[in-house]
Image (tube, rainbow, N blue to C red):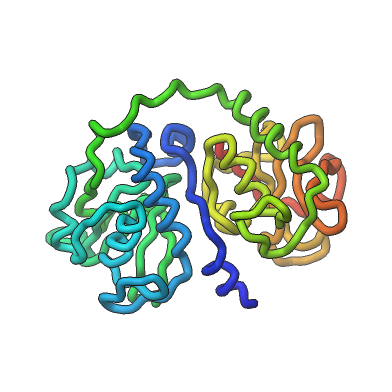
Amino acid sequence: MTKRDWVMKSTVAVMLSTSLLMGGQAGVVAAKTPDSKQSEVANIATSLIGKDYDYKAKGPKQFGSAELATYAYKQVGISIGSTISSLYKTGTKVSEKSVAPGDLVFFASSGSGSPTFMGIYIGSDQFVYSSKGEDEVVVKKYSEYSDKFVGARRVIDSSENTPSKPEKPATNIADQVIKNGEKYMGTKYKYGSSSSTTSTFDCSSFTQRVFKEAGITLPRDSRQQSTVGKSVSKSNLQKGDLIFMKASVTTSSDRITHVAIYAGDGKILHTYGSPGVTYSKYDGTNWEKRTVKIKRVI
């Protein structure tokens, strides 16, 4: 199975709950917690990353620009328009910096006037859209498209939202992430393991699962996960931080091949090879020497 096939077949849960992660992204302020259906739309959109672009295609294997949104909302029982112009008028208007996962975001190549392409905001300063130029469904950094932004719409009215619960302190969430991971200790490692199973994990499906159980959703693979959150240095490591590593100490390439969770006390919680889910010493080991970047998503 090719990497592309693996990405397309993996069920990807999306990004962070709005109140937790968006505050750590430059240029995007936290919005109200979206309706659960709207969050599910964001989950569905992210699961479609890697699918082919095809003009006016309605899915599930190929998508046009507007049709991606139409399809995602249809999966949660909501019918919306099927053209960019009709979707640009649907729901309620949302400001550029108040978007929440599931909101429709619109852009114009010229930066003004009627939108020429659109996507679904998925949280963590990212949106998903079906790109004609790249011939597939892709994920992009939202703030980098600010000069092309022309509007955003919320399909599900905010009055339908249930009151959000007070945020938990970050330390409590990190403890919960570690606790979630510990219950899977010894679970077998399998490369490309489906995100829908807990009988096996690869490194990124494990991090995705235990963060999701703590209320934080992440992209499917380690390289995608490395694009979210706030970068931190080794000297500022905190429990719950994600540590991304290259293939070996000696390789000159910084291509990310592994992700682990910093568990405090110089240890990491992760999965690999024969031990499966396990704790490993981090400080002064090859795991530390292989580190490419560290991201904080809590």
